[in-house]
Each structure stands twice: as C-alpha cells, then as structure tokens.
Image 1 (tube, rainbow, N blue to C red):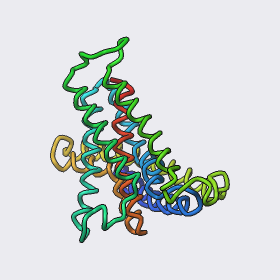
Image 2: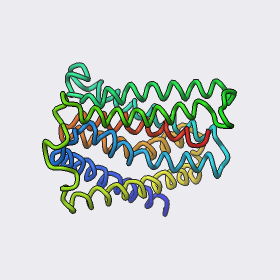
Image 3: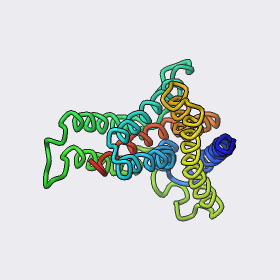
Length: 262
C-alpha cells in the first residue's frame, strides 16, 4: 500500500513540475535571446535525462552491470523516439513543416544519430580499440558531444539566426522568480522521477510482475514519464520545437553518459 501511495504522489509531482518547468522554459525563451529549440535541447533535455543518468551510474558502478546500464540508455532513447513518432503520427503534415522545428532540432537530431552510431560501433568492438587504457569510442562520443554543444552555441549566435545574442534581454536579466521556478521544478522532477522508478520496481516485485510484460511496462512508463510530460506540455502551449528539442537533447545526453564508464 505504501509503495502505491509513493508511486501516485511521485507521478503527480512529475506531472505538475513537468508542466511548470515547460512553461518556465517557454517564458525564458521569450525573455532572452534563446530559441525554444535551444531551451528544449539544453535545459529540458538535460533535466529529463538526469533520472536515467542516476539509474545508469547505479547499474554500472554499484551493481557492476554494464549491460543493464547500456540497456537502460538505449531503451530510454527508443522510448523518446517513440514519443516523437506519436507526435508525428497525429500531425496532419510533415513533421518539420507542420510543427516548425528550429535549426537546433535538426542539428541535434544529426548529432544524436552520430553518437548512437559511435556507441553501437563501440559495442561491436568489445573494447579492442584503446588509447592509454581508454576506450577510443568513449573518447569519440565525448568529443562529439562537446563539439556538438559548441556547434549548437555557434548556431545560436549565427548572423542568419533570428535569435541572436543581444537582440533581447540577456540571461543576466532573467527575473529571480523565473530562475527559482526553473531550479525548483527541475529538482522536483529529478527527485520525483527517482522515487517513481523505485516505487514502480517495488510494486512490480511485490505483485509478482517483476519479469513479466506488465512489470517491465510499468517500469518503462515510470522512467519515461518526465519526457512524456514535458514533451506534451510543450505541444500543449504550441512550442513544437521545444518538444522536439527535449527529445533530441535527452537522447544525446543519454549517449554521452556511456562515455563516462566504458
């Protein structure tokens, strides 16, 4: 009974905080020189990926189960793309034209594809290629991630980009209330998501669903709920570029985690 209550409370907290974080991100884009796609990639994508990072690090370092860690990463990315697929399925036109994706979204999509390809090649190499005892594909993933972020920043400041630094108010002039809202709701999502995943796992074990389709589905929904809430909240306010940015940003951050322990 207690785990059911924890699950319900955590899910409710994710729903509320996810909605509020999305609104705060949209407000941030309005007040600053940042595009909504950039806010989705950097802010929302990072926040919704933190629960996966915690579970991945736990599986890799404490449980000594790298297979579980990699399964968590690739499973999360697949679920994220499924969310984007549902969005595309119910749209009446091509995804790029209908939903007005920003250039950051397309750039991050390509970056995600490259990083996932490197991760798959690294799995196939079985750690054969190493430089100073470091897996070369981990180095390539980390380098690609950092170069991609630099490219995103450069794209944001490009003269042909309508969102140039200095055109609107700067980040340093963001109201304190908005900063507090971003920090509090981001922290709430991380804490509530961790509690949600833990309670879902306990419920699956107690009910005997642990190794069944129902148990796995419950855990999958629990770990993907932050992305689902934030993405559809962004769509609800008409910010499709922020929704796609959240998905692609979460995916590249998830893959970047792999570089930390391979």
